[in-house]
Length: 48
Image (spheres, rainbow, N blue to C red):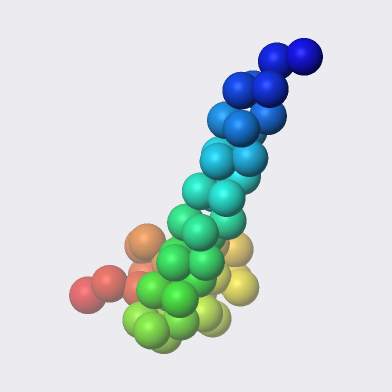
């Protein structure tokens, strides 16, 4: 059994979850939740 493969996979999943959580918190702080719901155009219309 390749045990290190499971370790790498677990670390990758945890990293993705933490990154997604930080991204959601950043979007909520910026107030672009409506833009995200509209189809993910927060990068175009959310900034002046």
